[in-house]
Length: 294
Image 1: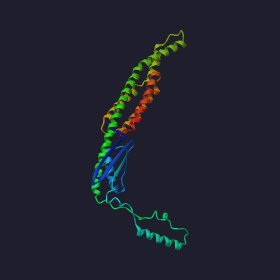
Image 2: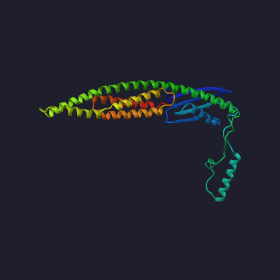
Image 3: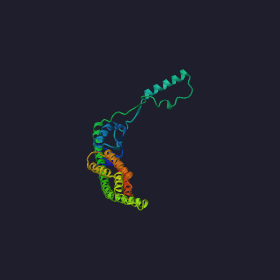
Image 4: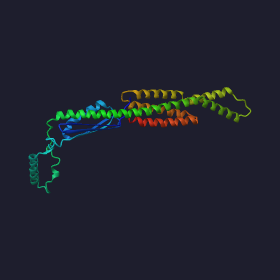
């Protein structure tokens, strides 16, 4: 069964007094795009979380929000620190440069913001491995919740599109059924016109039949209908498949659109043209729905 790219998942856990919360929002995207937002002290977990997401999903834009309550942790206050000895050394060098080069102005904070190694990153948490294990487990639960929601959304989309395919098939048969009537109507119109223009001259049935046959071949859309029905069957097969089918479905609906356009170009029947316009509208709807399929 197909899967949507729209979903949401959330999971929470507690480890050593720390509350871990993982939320995942998923929307449609051409490829798989995963962004992870988590505390800087836990940045070492990001790569593994991305890996787990890639094992579950093949397409979609995933935003993963991770919150860990570290306020009561003894390591919590160990954020970025200032390398004071190095900072003082830089300051002395600035003073020396100012004196040697006789530079005007004062030394401000702006001179220090881009200096290397002024800020010292915090050391890793003492129990980082244990936190990572619990965090990955919680993230997997949230990913699974998002996957289940995407599956439910996919089932709903599948039902809507399956109903649309049935309606399209019915209208295609309406067009096929009208084909003989269209030819007969054309024969009658042509015969009436010939007789009105050549009154008193016997109608050449052989020539009339030949002209009707030429027109019938010109407006024949049997091949287009058959190819379109074949595309509909492939569409159904993909809806029932368990693999990501969004790109294949998008290609199929484009091909269906081409066949419908050809039918419209050949049609000289008002009722058939109305049906073809309706078909184009339905295929446009299908294309929009496909954009959200993984």
